[in-house]
Length: 108
Image (cartoon, rainbow, N blue to C red; front, side, top):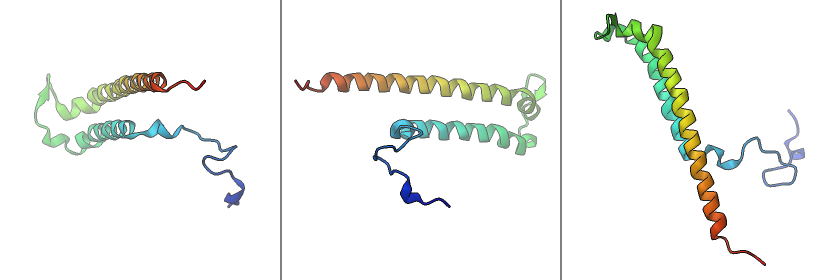
């Protein structure tokens, strides 16, 4: 194992950060957690409980429909929701950064 004392610590010069510290704020983590729950329920919940899902979509039982087509639609929806939410978060962050810059007094 390499000697960790030779690596710069956080805040020291030369410290490379893969991501800025605010990239994984609470909003992003909650979004990821919610979408992972939807993914898990779609992937595993429907498969495990397919026989208990007795209603039909069209002429097909919902278990068969989710396995063949519905899960793909849900996964596409997850990607669309994630892209839309991240775009919204970025716009909010840009507005907040502009407001912070505008409120800071100029040092002259």
